[in-house]
Image (cartoon, rainbow, N blue to C red):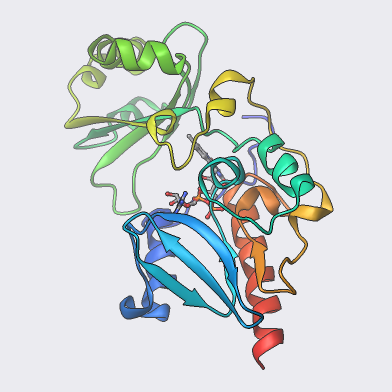
Length: 256
Ligand SMILES: Cc1cc2nc3c(=O)[nH]c(=O)nc-3n(C[C@H](O)[C@H](O)[C@H](O)COP(=O)(O)OP(=O)(O)OC[C@H]3O[C@@H](n4cnc5c(N)ncnc54)[C@H](O)[C@@H]3O)c2cc1C
């Protein structure tokens, strides 16, 4: 498709990237499922992070890597200037109101007839479909972006699945109607990713955000490193990697 010539895929999917980083950090240095509710200054040397369980964690440095709108509305940051909170609220989280469908098959049957599995459509629920088959060819899969609104998706989930299979059958043949599995991942239902403003405002690809998103706060002890902060490819995985690398370099400068 136009503009997608240089797209690449990661063998094993993006999870492989996360697992590789996580392995290097060591599991004892990672906490998951820990919801942050407050980041506050605790004297000149340390920062206190409060979790929703009531637990407090003390840190010398904090890198905030959660969606800016979600942070601005759900994490208390008494030190944050109003101009920063305003910019954070104004920065959409790219694609956060969208959903993806993944359809698994035992083999990529569409390739038998020379079809690529790529679809661009305005007539079914999936507006764009790609061949998502893994490198080992098993399972075979297609994934597509769902064009229905969040309200439609959530009010008619069974109809959505049926219409997806009908659409794939129309495009790729009857075998598409009998997948091993059909999974819909709907980010619009995840309050840690999507914000009320994302659901009510039209989504567009983010421009590079203002400089105050990339400034350091509390004498360099707090900075932001979610994808939308990046000057390179904001909103994309590449942006998340770029801003993460920059935050890591800034951090190492202060400790080495
Ligand atoms: C439907 C969809 C399709 C996309 N397609 C593409 C694509 O094809 N190519 C591409 O490059 N990018 C794509 N993206 C964008 C890509 O997923 C993001 O750019 C990337 O995930 C951003 O990574 P991140 O680490 O900056 O933030 P995220 O991956 O958003 O991670 C932020 C984390 O912060 C957590 N969090 C939120 N609040 C709190 C809290 N209070 N306490 C603790 N944790 C919290 C969240 O649970 C989440 O795990 C897509 C996004 C969506 C939604």
